[in-house]
Amino acid sequence: MQAIQRVLTGITTTGTPHLGNYLGALKPAVAASQQASTDSFYFLADYHALIKCQDPQTVHRSGREIAAIWLALGLDTDKATFYRQSDIPEIPQLAWFLTCMTAKGMMNRSHAYKASVDDNQRQSNADLDQGISMGLYSYPILMAADILMFNAHKIPVGKDQIQHIEMCRDIAMRFNHTYGEHFVLPKAMVDEGDAKVLSGLDGRKMSKSYGNIIPLFAPTDELRNLIAQITTNSLQPGEVKDPDTCTLFEIYSAFATHEETLLMRQAYANGIGWGDMKGQLFEYLNDYLSPARKRYEEIITDPVYIESELQKGASKARAHSEPFMQRLRSAVGIMSLVSDMGAKSAGGKVKKELSQEEQVKVDAGKAKAMAIAKQRAEHDTQQLKMRVDELINTINASSDPKGAGEAALLDLRTQADSAKKKAKKNLQQIVGLLEQRLTS
Ligand code: TRP
Image 1 (cartoon, rainbow, N blue to C red):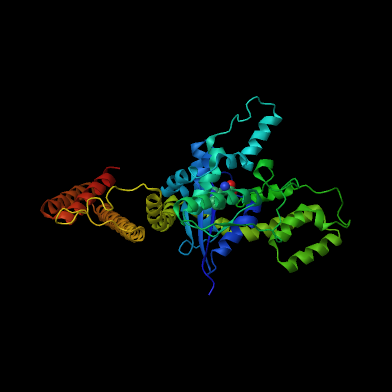
Image 2 (cartoon, rainbow, N blue to C red; image 1 turned 180 degrees about the vertical axis):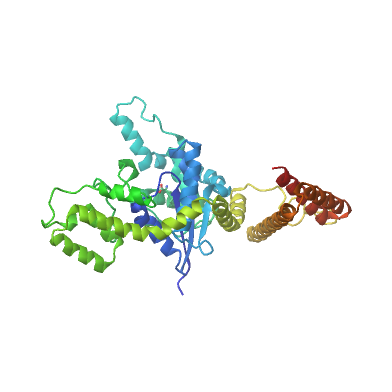
């Protein structure tokens, strides 16, 4: 049997995903997550977003939109682990360990950093580092932490990110060499094959920086308008046209089946008019995208659902990251002075020191117990809320809601006074919640 491969990738939460992102990254990722031989980790890279975007509202909104897009495209969050980077506190902790293992000289060679230096040079800025934050400079280290935290094998990325995966390997090797074998060395997975980059409205590569994108879930009217703007040449209806240099055809064939594409090729030979072609492309894309767009519109208005999905993912991710971080902390020498603080035996003797392996097991057990306790607490809160909902319904249905509300509160308080421990606490919480609801 083929060993399970862990595939991990991050999506920086800035900007609006477009058709090119869908074909190049989203669609293949959702498909890959359905394979039994892969264990997919997909996350919203919101710490990375802070490098490019300092507008809190945009950062917040993009996170929600991008999460909703993944869910609308049918990502199975029971199979894949889908989480938000900032919900995993071990990632920035690891980033620091890795920072201390990273050669500054290597970071000086980072493409993203060098591109900004080049810009300054072109603009004849005296300070070549002008406008460059340490976030931009060192983000490949944060990216390495994202990857190494989960010991992922394969990292699907665009070509521009290959260097970062190389850096990640370099950093992992240095850490392993210094502290022992803790990290898997990841490989970049770059889709070359037939998935060529999609062109945008003006015929250049579809990219936010060119302002030529078609957003994945553009509403119908916007979609029609954008398609109408796609650049064509001045050939008239009836004149033979070349599909292979035409953006309309390119986008059509990226979505259509092989047979449909062949038919369209024939239509070009028969001299289809540009207006007609634009109409057909619009109809095709609109039909193709509308089921997912409808789901998106439902999901985006339900932040509670999105948040609960992300919390589910965070619990799954932290079941790995917590014990693994404990192990890494011990590996670098950061740990309690006694192996298990407070766990003294009856005789007052300090428990024997655990081996690293034993410690990892103990920590994994603790993390699991914590995760279970957290789940229980969430469940309990849910139950309480349901009871309050029921009470509210009964109160509202009575002829005198105000009196019924007061009576219910009085009754609950009396019960709470005589109840014990957990029951008492529950009743007190119900009283609190009910009071809030009745006064709001
Ligand atoms: N930097 C990546 C990008 O801009 C996003 C990203 C962040 C990422 N962390 C990652 C990709 C880890 C793969 C693995 O596209």
